[in-house]
Image 1 (cartoon, rainbow, N blue to C red):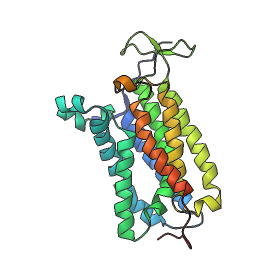
Image 2: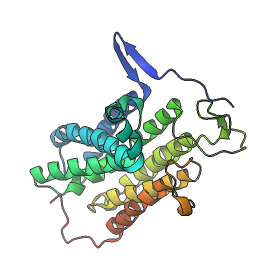
Image 3: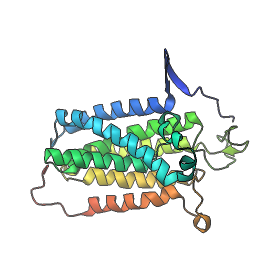
Image 4: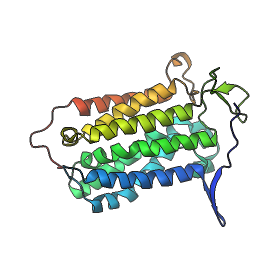
Length: 263
């Protein structure tokens, strides 16, 4: 089927035009924040509502700055070096999850240190909400007609005329389902288990493992953005997910400390 030509502007308020990608980030951050507040109320209550409200600003900066820098440095350095002004046009898309993750980690570590708490006291709650933003981001990828899938002959294939006339997997929707819906449901279930919530770093580890697996599966259907030459049997997205999986496995398998609390 032919890919529908969506209007890149989702909402027009006078001279202000809000694009789908920007709207996905705004809505995703707000929904995730509300979900975090609800999750933080479950025992053990290591962080307060006020602390999460204060952290929201820094996490938002981490997502945007880290995501953009990740896209520039990890995925398309030559493109942005040739057109430096494009770096600042985040409303047009082009945000790397792995870069955004690093930005969020930096924000959490710095804020947790100021509060004299373990970073995992915050990341365990934020990890549960992350699939909300991931889902909306992947849907925005589809609306923008970017990050297209590999050629295929499946009945539900889409032709993206701005790319070529080849039927392709709607890999953006596959990833929205895997990284968004499936991962959200898994983490929702895990977060309902108090024995899991009580272990610092456990929810963070489960998120890292779950995302790495979901991303690696989605990459099978996604057109590679970076050519790896002789190593084309894997994608750059899968390679970047390996350290996430390993660190997540470490967090899940490590022996809990005695009298583990929020410190």
